[in-house]
Image 1 (tube, rainbow, N blue to C red):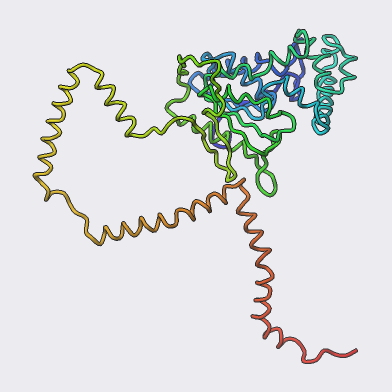
Image 2: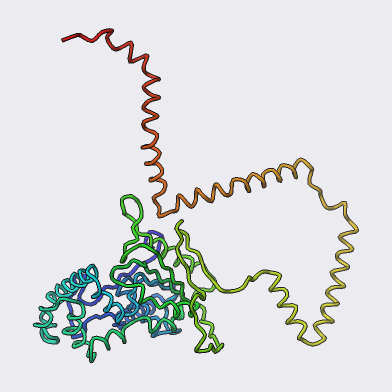
Length: 406
């Protein structure tokens, strides 16, 4: 975003980024006051500048929760949430289920204890310091630190109140959500599929691979796929005339027995790297829309019918005038028409080839290098043989007739 001329602001959680804690308030997975203050300050200082937000991991959960809390009152024009945990209670059950997840749990708990040691004077006064030092999981740390400081009754209460999945339905700005189905920390079981599909402002993109904030691209893994996807989404919002329009209210009452499973809007990332929209809407073309317009007009009074008859008379008169002067319409030569027909057929013939090449070159951004490597490895023996045959005569003249015997 910064390379394309956008002014960027990075907001860290309290106590991170080398900043000391100066109050008795610490951050947690549902603490939205800090991001609210940052957004309001920037909007007050630059009121005419469109504001776009990106959150990752716990930051994504906080961002989605903030957007749901504010609804239409937020100055944010668009946002993206990457690898959000969504439902903290489900995530807590998941991260203590298998060996791999338990290893991640211990590693994250170790990082939280390191964060606590940086701010020991504050936490030792506000929380259970002895319990923090003995914490072996995220749940232990939340029990001895987060719940005490933020005044939650239990850990489960904290997880339930701070889960962003409960706020998805009230998000009123365009929001792109990207989650990997193989995320070892944020399980796919916590993704609010139905809530995202029911909210037309949300685009939910799930990928089969990507891990937690990984999505590496290229042979050297120097690029992240989600960065390009988010940048493309946000710049498309900036160019859209519908950016930050008021959310259309849905007044249709749905039955409690009606399921929203397999209903739009949501997208899936295909194998060729393209994002495919999936919708349950019927075909909407010009013919259907024109029929709808005709049906609406028929319901109206007779004045519209009289206006249509008058307009039809004018159209008939114009058609007669045009038909009366056929010589003024230039006709294309037969040779030019034949050339255009040939060019169109040629483009139609090579279109599948171009499409296949584009799919190969876009597949995770590494197909060109991979194909070049495969071509080099497979063709090297043949090229070596051809080179030996081509230069054999020159080599024969330079070599001695008989090798000296020992």
